[in-house]
Length: 508
Image (cartoon, rainbow, N blue to C red):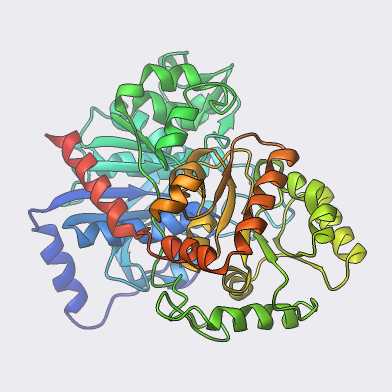
């Protein structure tokens, strides 16, 4: 398919047979509406969830299909796209077509919102090439929400209608509201991946989108005088979920409620926390093409070679017994990198090495580069993102640092455990739910997998680091810690089973 949205008819009958079979399937049907999905388009963790969860759901007999905007990368990467329905020119949104296709690495069906005037442009999904938000984001994601609701409504033009419309983050937040305004249909689930991003637009946006004026009130779309896409979803959806049980509790109170804590506390009876999974095939030290050597629970010895390779690659001193700490992160205040910087000189003084990979706030980027300049051979700071290097850091580091001030779920702490690299994390959200602190009791029971500190401060982080360095001197105890982490089940199959049960409870 070209970037202008010209659909290509597939060759052969396999594709047609697959869609015909799915249309007549008695399985529960779920439409998964999202603004990004790996491997087609990715800016963050939402894409990892959206690329993996629908496929995992299909593995537990849920007929799950994706709905994505027709960005150039989606049009080019989707398998066998073809025209499904032509909506013609829509009020507020202009000409819109719906394409059907499949994800490139699976048979997971995909619907694509084909509206080149909204989605085919320079820059990323949300921002232009100059880093500013696209000026018409309200219309771009208003259309995505409207179409999700239409496909889930009784007025759908398709002969497949979902039992559940599963919406994700603010970009699809208007869908449960639209579905209500259209007279209903499927049950709706709104999943919060990060409450800090709410899709807030000026009040005149209500009219521009053609939303009912009477819905612009505190018990509806209004948020401190503006329109909030996310609040709309949280108010109108039948059920709510977020990406860890602890985060589900935290967002019902200040400060993590981000102004929505009252609404969320009032809906706590329909709010569920389900921890994200990870792609255990893509993140597997026994079969990872990004690593210079492979290792597993049965043979950890090659992990030391991964460490040596990482030291060589990043011009660190080749010191096999020096503790090597890894950090892979967006460089923002949320991620607590300033806490690491506050401890860094002390940590180097303890004889340790540090590796950073990430991009973000200019002040943090400059501080990390300055740290590397002050400590040549001890600190390496790579500003940017490199998928292969991320895998090599997870494998080559001895300890992973993740001191986020808040973290809805987090993925790197799970990658680290899978790679035998015990993480040090702040006790918040998904970090708290997925890492078992190395207390004496947990170590004795063989269930400890990392180090958890309660207070978000440099002092508390430094104390946790000191605990890790102390335990690392006991080689046998350290290996038990590594193996316990590597044995954890963080697969999407586990999370998919929980979502399947949630869907069933919604439709009974």
